[in-house]
Amino acid sequence: MRISLILCHPAQGSFNHALAQACAGALREAGHEVEFHDLHAEGFDPVFGPEEHKRDAVLPPLVERHVEQLCAADGLVIVHPNYWCRPPAMLCGWVDRVLRPGRAYRFVPDGKGGARPEGLLKLRFAAVITTANTPPDKEQALYGDPLDQHWRKIVFGLCGVQRVERLAVAPVITSTEEQRRSWLANTAASVLALTREG
Image (spheres, rainbow, N blue to C red):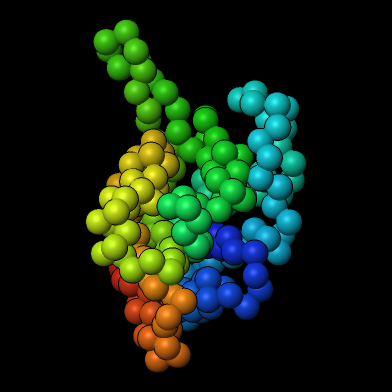
C-alpha cells in the first residue's frame, strides 16, 4: 500500500516524532511505500492565500506534491498534539490547502435544491494519532472529544473516508519510559493492522 504520513509537531525529538517514526518503520518493514512529511521540517506554509481559492489554481510545488500524494494514497496517518482540543494551526492550514475541492471532495446536487458532499479520496483508511497531557476519560467527560469529531465527521466525513481510527496517547507529561515504549509498539501495531483490514 501507498501510505502518506503527516507529522505536525514543532519540536524535533518530541514524542510525536517518535510515534511517527515508529509507524513509518513498521509500515516500511511490512513492505508498504511511505511518503513521510514533517510539516515543520519542510517549512510548510499553512496560509491559504486568495490566489489558491480558484478551483484551477496553480499551486506552489510543495502544496501540489502533497495534494498529488494524498490523492494517490491508499492510507493516511496523521500524528499531532492536542492543542486546545484542536489540531495545531499548521495542520489546520495543511487541511485547508491540501484537501481541496475538486481533488479531495466535491459538492453534487442533493435532489432537494441543495448540495451534498461527495468524497474523492481513495483512502482505504485514515489513522489520526494524537498526544495530550489530559487523560482521555477526563477529556471525554469535560468536552466530548472534539478532536474525534473534527477528524472523523468533519474532515474525513466530507472526503468520504469510511475507515477512520483515532489513537489517543495520554497523559504524556506524567508517562514513564516503559509506558512510552508500550505506546510506540501498540501504536505502530494498530496502524499496521489497518493495512491488513483496509
